Length: 276
Length: 360
Image 1 (cartoon, chains in turn cyan, purple):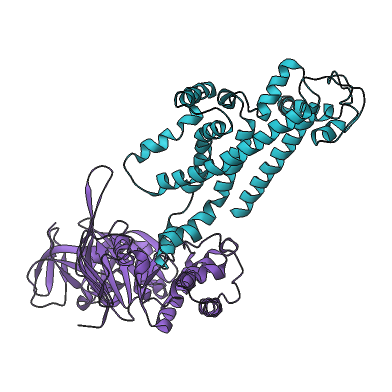
Image 2 (cartoon, chains in turn red, cyan):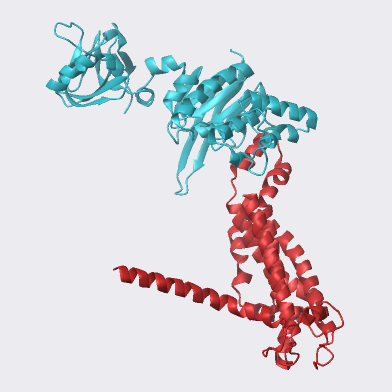
C-alpha cells in the first residue's frame, strides 16, 4: 500500500513537472534566442547580444548591416503601430458597446431580450474563418474600401461579445438589493447607476477591455481577410515572415509582447483582487 | 381617528407564479400606523409581510388600493421620492464605500454640504455605538456592526417612518436580544414610527407597541402583544404566537365538551355553540391529592428540562396530545411524576380562553 501511495505521488509530481515544461519551455527558448548573436540562423547559438532589442527600438546596430532580409525594420515598426491603433480603437468601441448591451440585457425587460442575449454569444462560437469570409463579402459588396477602418469594424463585431460576457458575469454576481437600498435612500436611477452600479461593475469593464485589447493585438485570421493590400498588422507581418525567412528580431518582439501582456494581465488581476 | 403616519386603504397585490397560478400576497389590507408607534408585522414566510413592507417603501406596485404617508398619497411615487427608509435583511451596505460614505449616502444624494454631512454622519454613528468607524470598509466589520451601519444609514435623513425587514435574523441569539432592546430605545429617542417585519414571535412580543399577525395576505389580528398572546382571535394566531393546547368542541355555560368526550372548564358563563378552548402550556400545574381545580389526566411521554422550566409532553386517555410547562422550582413534583409517568394537569378555568368556531 505504502509503495503504491509513493508511486502515485511520484507520478503526479512528474506529470505536473512535464505539464509546466511543455507549456513554458517554448516561451523560455524564445526569450533565450532573442539574445542570440547569430544573424542568419536564429536556432544556432553564436553569442550573447542585446542588439535585436536595440534594433526593434529603432537604434542603428552593426548586426543588421551583415544580414540580408526582404523586410526592413521600419516595416515591422509600422505593422506594430497599425496593430496598436487598431487595438486601441476596437477596445474603446467594444468596451462601451459591450458594457451597454450587458446592462440593457441584464437590467431591463424588453421584447426579444433572451434572444438578444443568446445571439451575443454567436460571434465567439463562429469559426474565425467563416466570420472573416462573411465580413470580407459584406465589405466588398457594400463598396467599403478595405483598410484600417474595416479591420476596426470587423474586430469590433466579435470583441463586443467578449466584453459583453465578462461584464455580464460581473452583473450576474451583483446584489440587486444594493440598488434598492440606493433608491430607498433617495437616489434616482441615474445617481444609482453612477454611484452604486458602475463602481461595482468597473473591474468587469476593465477586465473586458484588457481582454479585448489582447485579442485584437493577436488576431490574425479575421484581420487577414479584411485588411486589404495596404495595411499590415503585426501578426500578419510575422506570419508573412515565416515564408520568407524569419528575422531574429521576431524573438525580441515576441518577448516584448509577452512582457506587455503579462504586465496588463497582472494589472487586471491586481485591480480585480482589490475591488472585492 | 388617531394621529396616523401611514395608512393603507384596501391595499391589494397578487403575484403570478412560474406555474401559472396566482398568489394573493395582500388581500385588501387596511392598516393605520400611528405616529411614534413600534408596529411589528408577524407571520410565516409567504404570509405577505415583506410584500406589505415593500408596498410602503415603493418597491412593490399595488394592484389596487392606496397608501398614504403623513396624509399624502404615495401610491404612484417611486421609492426614491418617499419619506421612508429601510433597513434591509442582508444590510445591503455598499461594499465599495466606507462606513462614513455609506452612512452619509442619503445626505450626499440630497445635496447636503460636506461639512454638515460629516457632522451628521458622526452623530448617526454615535447613536448606534460606532463612533469613529467612518474610515472602515463594511467587509472589515462584524455582522452586528454592519447591522448598526445599516441602521445609521437609514435614520440619518430623519425619515418619517423606518422600515425594518427582518434585520436581526442573521445575528446570533445573544446579540439579537441586546439589539432588540437597543432598537426599542432608539425608536423612543428618535420619535419616529418603526414598522418591523419578523417571523420570530418572541421578537414581535418583546419590542412592539402593536403586533399585526399576517397569514394568507390578510391581517389576522392587530393588537398589543399581551392581547395577541392572551386573547388570540383565531386558532392561527393562537398557534403561531406561543405554544398552545386547543380543544375544539361544543361550549356550554362554564363547560366545553370535545368530540372525544373531554370536558374543559372555562370562565365564560353565557357561552354556547361550537367553540375552541385555548390553554397555554404554562397555565397547567401538577395537581396534588386533594386539589379541587379542574384538570386533565395524562400519560407522560416525554419530560424535557429546558433550564427555567420543564416541558411535559403527555397524552390524554382519548389520545390527544397535551403540552405543559412547569417552573423548574417545582422539581420535587416533577421527580414524583417521572416515576409514575402519569400526572393530573390542573388549570384555572378563568385562564382558559375561548375562540369562536371557524369554518374548517
